[in-house]
Image (cartoon, rainbow, N blue to C red; front, side, top):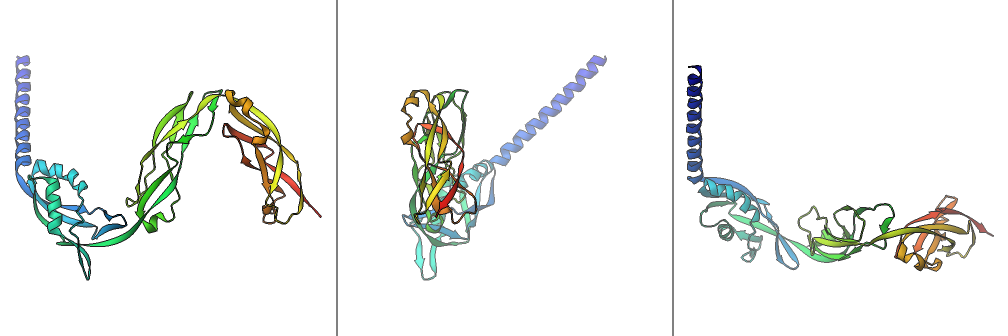
Amino acid sequence: MNYLNKWSKNDTIRKFTFIWVIIFFVWCIVTLSSEKSKSYQVKLPYLIHSENKIIYGLPQTFELTLSANGWNHYKIQRRLKKIKANPSPIQGTLNGFFLDNVELRTDIKRLLGNEVKVDAVYPSRLRLNWIKTANKKVKVMPNSSIFFPQGIGLSGSIQLSSDSITIFGPEYLIRSINSITTNKLEVTLAKSGSYEVGISAFSNSLIQLSENKVRFFVPVDKITSGKIILPVTIVGNSTNDKISLFPQKVTIAYEVAVRNFLKVKPEQFLITVDASKIAKSKNEKLVLNITKKPQWVGNIWLSPTSVNYIIEE
């Protein structure tokens, strides 16, 4: 008897749950199929009108009222992000440049399709301003953290498929930009490899890139180490003072691919100190600089890293 009561109770719960599921399903169908009007705040994107101008709207956002069923309102959210007003019908007046919302409505209608009705666009007229633009070639700076198993290392310089790209945007913004950095390549390598890496985009969407990714080629090989004792060359001695260095020679240690070990020669290196910094510096030592080195060596260490000097009368 208890079993029958328990079964009857569970059956009632199942029926009750089923009825609510049906009610919810019917409510969804009715809600999604019924037409209603809804307002959206839409950001007007920047528009490239010609090769030397960018248009931007005042205000930056406008209000759009649309009629559609619930399902189409759901799809509208994504489509509105793609709105791009056609700049060709821009009207010039004594008070500035304007884009009538009739033209904007046409573009919006084309984007959203026949299932959506455009009820209103506010304000009725969008005022536009110009920004002078320019393009500029900038250097691409690689950003990488590459790790190697023991006995393995770089056998040369990391190469990029493009060492420079062209940026386009407002002249006042790109004037001070001379380089752009790639996204970070972080990888452990036991052999040479090629990797596609994105270029870090600018936070300001007005600045556009001719390319948004480059390819890294990382030459890897079995490596060994070597040492060479080299003389230090003085540069920048415009006063022709007689300067003596202590020590006059330093040790340079480096890593090189095994196959390139015999190619390394002392004359391929140049270690210098800058005498022009003597008067400006209160330090008793001059810092050593690696002015020249063969491209197939890497991870160079100097010992010492600076030298003492005496100016002889």
